[in-house]
Length: 56
Length: 130
View 1 (cartoon, rainbow over the protein chains, first blue to last red):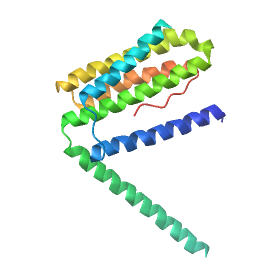
View 2: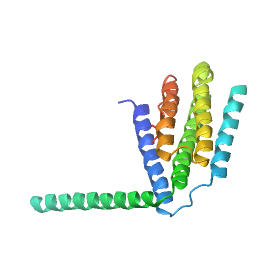
View 3: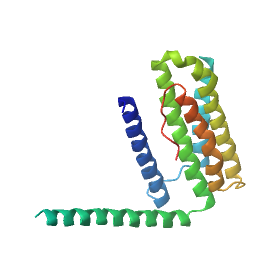
View 4: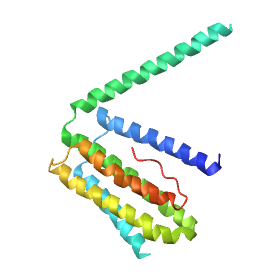
C-alpha cells in the first residue's frame, strides 16, 4: 500500500476518534454545546475563505 | 503458562468490550435526554467543523500541488461552496425547529460526500464525514 494512502487512513481514523470524543463530551455535558451564533460565525468564516479562494 | 496468558488476554478483551458497551449506553442515554435544539447544535457544529478542516486540508494540498489548480477552481471549490451554503440553510431551518437533527444529517451528508468525491479527482483523500 502507498505511504500516502496509509497516512490518509491514519489521518481519517484519528479525525474520527477526535470527532467522536468531542461530540461525546458535548452530549455528556462535559463541554458546552456551541450556541447558534457561534456556529453561524464559523459558517460565515468558512464562506469568507471560500470567496477569497475564488478571487485568487 | 501459555493457557494462563491466553485466558488473561481474553479476559482483558472482554473487559475492554464491556467498558465500551457501557460507555456507548451512557452516551446514548445522555443523547436521549437532550432537547431537539441541543441535538441540532451538536450535529450542525460537528459537520461545520469537519467541513472547515476539509477545506483547510484541500487548500493546503492545492498550494503544494499547483497542477490541480484548475480542478480546484472548477470542481472542488464550488462543491465546498454548495456544502457550506447547504449547511447555512440547515442552520436557519434548525433554529426555527423546522427540521430535526436526523433530517439535517440525512440531507447534508450526501452534499458533503460530493466534496470528498471532488477532492479525490485531485488525488486527495479526505476523511469521510461522520
